[in-house]
Image 1 (cartoon, rainbow, N blue to C red):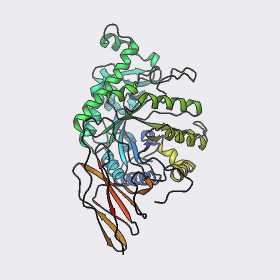
Image 2 (image 1 turned 60 degrees about the vertical axis):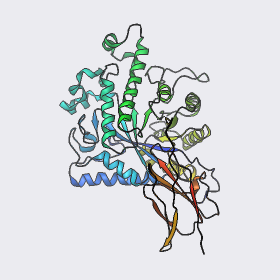
Image 3 (image 1 turned 180 degrees about the vertical axis):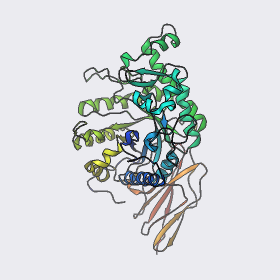
Image 4 (image 1 turned 45 degrees about the vertical axis):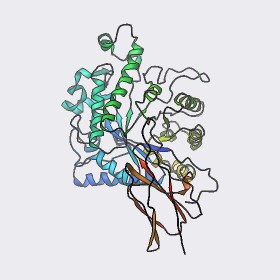
Amino acid sequence: MVMPATSAIPPKYEMRAVWLTINWRLDWPSQPATNNTTMQQQQQELCSILDEVKALGLNTVFFQTRIYGEVLYPSEIEPWSRMISGESGRSPGYDVLAFAIDECHRRGLECHAWLITIPAGSSKHVQMQGSKSLPTRHPQLCIKQGSEWYLDPGHPETAQYIASIAQEIAYNYDVDGIHLDYIRYPDKYETFPDGKSYSKYADEGVSLEEWRMENITHIVRTVCDEVKQVDEYIMLSAAPLGRYASVESQPFTSWTCMGGVSQDAVNWLYEGNIDFVAPMMYYKGEGFTPYLIDWVERIGGEGNIVAGLGAYRLDPKEGKWSLTDIDEQIKATRRMKAQGQAFFRWGHLHQYQSLARLLKEQYYTAAALIPPMCQLQGVPTIEAVEGIRLTQQGGEDIVSWQPVDGAVRYVVYATTHDQVDINNPYHIVEPWTTETTVTLPSGYKSFAVTAIDMFRRESTATYYVAKRK
């Protein structure tokens, strides 16, 4: 790939993610699968979306997999989502999560199962679900606040219930990550009616605020323990509020992770319970940059921050942002060495082609590899590839090599110059292949191949220089 003259070299390691929303069918599907024809239409529609995601230079999809006590796969714990099939508990005729994972991987995209954790749905939603609803199946775990139902984070069985869902996914699917959303107390936390649980389960002398904070952290720990027992390579992440805490340079605000919703996400990283956070930083200007700095400084080298950017704010009804607002935020994430960006949500990346062009033509002009997982103490690195060979067939170059134990995919670099530079992402010609051979246009002179292990770590490079006549 030739580097654009006007662009700085982008990071080689960067998560470029998008939230793909199934709730209310905002992003997908456009209609439920009620027969074989509509099932195939759903699948084709998702494939088209993933083609666009790949074309924009993104590399990760947060695929909404659980919504208000309903899921997008055949589960022994919760019913099928009516968003996918039109009726709670009814199968759409195919395993949606398995299909999404396979199609993501086919395009070199990671697929992270995005789980809405604490909310159980509105009264109307619960009524529509009937006997399949979470409050009906597990009334002891649920609390109603106004017209909304929630799992009670303070009930001792709630953590295990949420963890069992994550574990079921980890056990049955080749998913790359599990992404915890709404892992917090509700928006109106001051009036959340959990007094009985506090009286019954809190230790003596522990304040309500301390007890709630520990409840959410306990849920995250339990999810981590259950998932890692099944597959230690699955990335765990969370989408906390965009502001971890108030910062000195800005007016005080209580709407922060630590200010009331009990999300001590920095501690989750320090404890090793998650691999990265994707805070929902849907603010601009001074509402964004000081809080990004705060996240980066607090996390330091203990974990990754992938800044959640509000693409939906370009909608006049949602904020009437300009493209410049998001442009400046992307620049800030790179300037402050965040590990990437995540856009909420896909429909707005698709709708606002000016943003899509900005990503494709200015920021995502070269492929990027997923940053390695953080908690890797004592884990040996993967071996380098051996036996690179170059053959020619039909005017194309076929590069092959020997498989490496523990490799889940390989990266291929090439250049027309004498020496390939694996630190230059413009030299990446294949960022994700599970095969040990690739076919490239003829004309490259220097090649390199690396192996990627389950922790997303890259081996040292093995080089090859073509001897052309």
